[in-house]
Length: 357
Image (cartoon, rainbow, N blue to C red; front, side, top):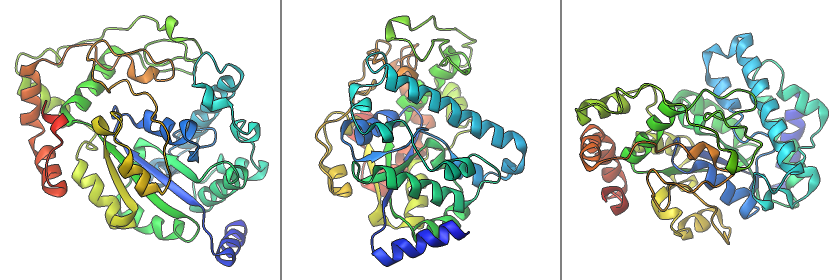
């Protein structure tokens, strides 16, 4: 605990705490594009080597005491580090040029060796999380405005865990939370298409079997799996299957309330994906106190259905709409997801018109 106490004394004495932005999204809602907007496109924040390391979820998960959890975590970070290094050496082939035009020390992921080693070792502790982010802040503070923990798994953190952990983190960081929501029916349709039509990723390939280090022209063949559920003749039955699966993160109102309870309403901001990537960025700029000059590309806006643009650094989104979403299926989806729509409307005063088109 000595390093963390020293850091606490340092930041309490200075009266200035670095910002830490939590990205809380739902899969297939433009979360990656939002991170690109905040980081590489506008230099607001930087996430070190691993875009989604999921450290807090490992802390919250009761299975994290087992060796396989540590092995999975290390493998994830090491793989993302290899990808990061490759993008630095090959900027024209994958990530946008902005990624590699900044401080090489930051982009290369330099960090105090002892801190990095501790972060990658057992057990998962809040001390390691704090020391890791404060060490990274020392590297980026002259080039960026904030640290960031941008991970869809943050949405699955339990209320009890947040209630215990956030007060500790607030001693060191000025915490803000941004979340982005997409029309529930379109989001679930993209998610299920992706699950059905893509291979499980390995160390070098994405879920389409495509080498992640190659240009978009080498997108690879999609692997078509069983589609019985997707092609169900009863759309309501089909959507019940989708909306009552393992993930409950499409319950947007519950997700929003959970973080408001933990960090306060003034520190939580939600975006409607369809509005944000169409150019509506003023509310986010006001929330962050920072001017965003541009918005990164997003495959889902404008919605081109089964013909999305193949942006080379958004491979995960390429095969997320293989089957067309018919009007019949969409109406069935709205029935199955009615509670999600109703709860959103009650909390925020209505449903975005883009979700009803």
